[in-house]
Amino acid sequence: MDAISFGTDGWRATLDIFTAPRVRMVGQAVATHLREAGHDAPVAVSYDARETSRGFAEELARVLAANGFDVLLPERDRPTPLLAWAIIDRDLAGGLMVTASHNPPEYNGVKFIPDDGAPALPEVTERIEANLAEPEALPEDEWGTIEEVDFVDSHANHALDLVADRTNGERDSLLDGVTVAYDAMYGSGRGVTNQLLERAGAAVDGLHCEQRDDFGGTPPEPSAEHLAELTERVETGDADLGIANDGDADRLAVVTPDRGYLDENLFFAAIYDYLLDSDAGPAVRTVSTTFLIDRIAEAHGESVVETPVGFKWVAEAMGEHDALIGGEESGGFSIRSHVREKDGVLLALLAAAAAQEKPLDDRVDRLFDAHGAIHQSKISVECPDNEKARVLDALEGELPERVAGGSVAEVVTKDGFKILLESGAWLLVRPSGTEPVLRVYAEAGSEERVDELLDAGHDLIAPLV
Image 1 (cartoon, rainbow, N blue to C red):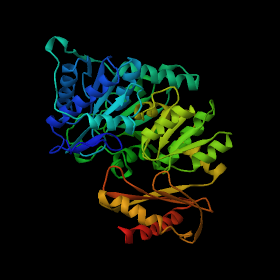
Image 2: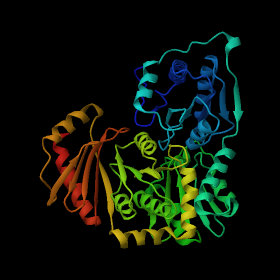
Image 3: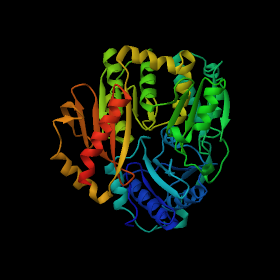
Image 4: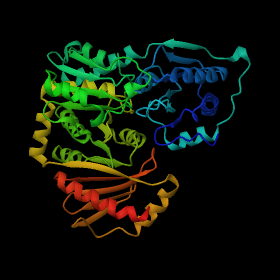
């Protein structure tokens, strides 16, 4: 029981810790939580492409059914956002997703999504953790049923309608003339994202669209170093853009002909600007996400809401502020009129629609011309989890009045310490929620200045660790 802890995005662990008995305890805790909250609607259980995920999903389904809940399972591994949409579309009590997202195959994980389709907030995960216990079955005549259902078509139809409404286009010809290179990274986006793009009229060149339990020897993390083949395909071929999903397809990365791997901050900015061409509304971003979003919002008379890192906080703020878009620099986004859960499948369709109207490279160039160039990067400093609080407490007493030669204008403490400089550049130090490291982020008008700020951030915290 002590090994189970719901962190930033559920409980993840290596398979020596993530075992069937512990997974069954999570299933019982969720069943108890739902019963105490008065839910009696069915519950969905989905899973990613890992070799062990289907088995763990079936364990969860059996525990929930033995507690009286009808359970819906997909016929094969499916992306997390399809589960989130099914919860809303089918009016379910909630859902469990078996996934370790971008982690390598020796990991697995599970997260709970409540009945609003948004990530569970700490008050919910704390109740689940408090209810961890060995499974207790009702009398067999009170058990629920377990049924396999399709999660794909409803989500695809909704995504097509949503993007067609924004573009005033026909849903089956939204992407006519667009060629997309798509990298599933052997994950659950295969046969989902690529087929959605094809249904919208795009020509799709697929990479790694088979299931491989080892993800081809590369963790399904759509970072620049893992997408060399996709980048080469776009830069040397006929594709208008490249798109990749992580292992459970709730995040995406984009590759363009001119820039190659497109920084997620710049993609966020380009998509927000694109949405503002035909709609209005604030944006929600995390503390680690670019201020370019703020400049775009100001130019359109809109506002920006800043949250701690973690899509659960983005989702909460999206609901409170009726945001047009919410996102984070790690590649997770959602938009108004959709579930408040990051969705790399829907955003792939939206990215292609934006690129059809104007190439994403041109959109970024236009934003730089209007608002100035912005560059961002980050580093990690090793720090044991049990030392993070001590280091941050010590840092509070060491915060300087100048950083890398620039005057400090303000320090924001929503999540760690975000040091705002009078020049508009910034430096952020915050604890990772998933690894034993402190993250150091910097943003400025040039790559050289970013490097200077990162060096200063490292020198500020390294003596404290």
